[in-house]
Image (cartoon, rainbow, N blue to C red):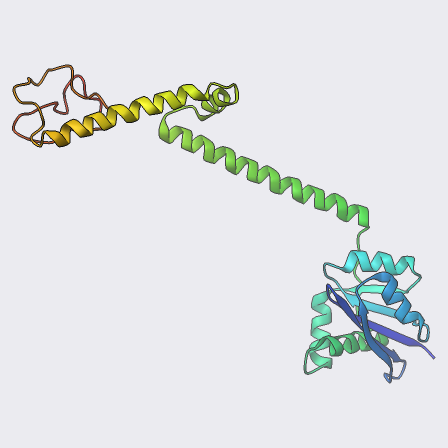
Amino acid sequence: MEYYAGLDVSMEETHICVLDREGALIREGKTRSSPAMIAAFLADGPPCEQVIFETGRMAPMLYHGLIEQGVPVQCVESRQAYQALKSLAGHRTDRNDARGLAHLARTGFYKPTHVKSLSAHAIRSLIAARKKLVGQSVTIDNQISGTGRRVRRSVAARLVAGIQGRGAEGQRWRAGSSCRALRALCSTRSHPHGGCGNRCRHEKDGPKVQGLRAPHDDSRCWPHHSPGFRGRS
């Protein structure tokens, strides 16, 4: 008597169903999704003529592991198996899928698919990981370059300066700019009308803070075209 088995594989456990040539149920159950456990479950029953399961993430590991255990296993395309299982079982469960795959192995209406070697899958995974890393590196490089162009400053030069221990210069520059900006704001707040009094429009001791605009009033203190003002137009 010939026997056939179907495996419905998931990440944690695998449902197994064994049928005879006439389609009668011989044995069914579930075990962990490892080649050794599946081979041990099949070894407890009658020897199977053919064992099939669908393609998926676990397919390479299970296929080559079961071949090493001496199990006559075949892997079928999941789309082909889906069409067959949809017609064989009305309600899709793991148990019914395993029984449907066993019927598929019994009738022989399936086309086995090629499963690449584990070394080929390892190389393919490395190539995919390298492609992902290169893409992320290019994306980050473009973002840094775009940021540098927006602030009109060489980001790379500042990073190198920080690495070489010259980051304190940038801190002193930022501190000085902040102090000048605060002094300018305080002087403007203390003199609501510009704080110019009798100062002329060309006085050189006004606040020369980049980006700071003087209030618009009749005194015309530090206008936009003043030589000491470098604000944005």
